[in-house]
Image (cartoon, rainbow, N blue to C red):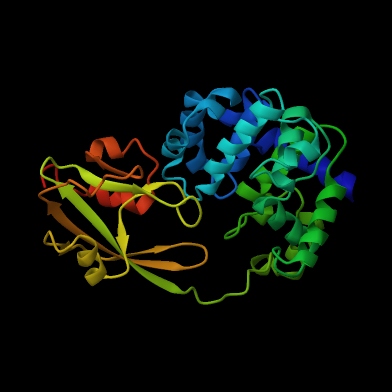
Length: 344
């Protein structure tokens, strides 16, 4: 069956696969790496313009390593999951310091870099060098779980072990780069999470989920638990010149090292934070959902008459809204800033 699966997938790929993705031309380790990291939490259609801008700004690994982190985060702004960008930057600098400015061509060296796990390392080596390494991203997990009728949430250790064994068994010895792209393409375009096109699938004759009528149930979803809610007040402060106050987030935690708005626990704390020097006006509240909690945000805005002392620390800046756009900003903060009128 493994040979049959890979052969059918490759035949399908030759006719129906995606052959013109920007990271395929040329298919270098650096470009494969950037693409794989972007695609960890992002769909292809969304990732493509970000990839093109990122590669134009940092065409080589050394250019990425030499760039300030703020610039890298700004290029990433809007993609979310910013730890991916921080890890790219750290890994690039490690490669310059320890690997001659290149990504390691051996699995252990590659997987040891920040942000590169087993599947990403395998994808880079398979795509760029044609080396026989299996991958197990979200699309591949879905294809294999349905094809083999694998029960259990893929995030569980036992289920993941089964899926990795299947991924290894189906990976061919020839045309590994094409096979890797083929199985990802099948999951992205045919064996989709909702409304899969089973009639168009080259593996339909072997699919246990299709045979048993459980395609919609596989792979099994993560057990549902209620997300906790946290509350915060975001201070959208402006001076007489129309500049806004931004501060850099701590090096760990949510939105680590991005530039954001000052925050307080509640409106009273916000006023105390400013020494009651200005009048604050509440804007429309909103909810921003993370993977592990919901953030209930109350934005408050006001004009600061005297800015002395407010930004006299390295991690605070007064910037015009158009200049703030060049920094790495969390998506909801960027949207808030974009709603501001030109004059305070």
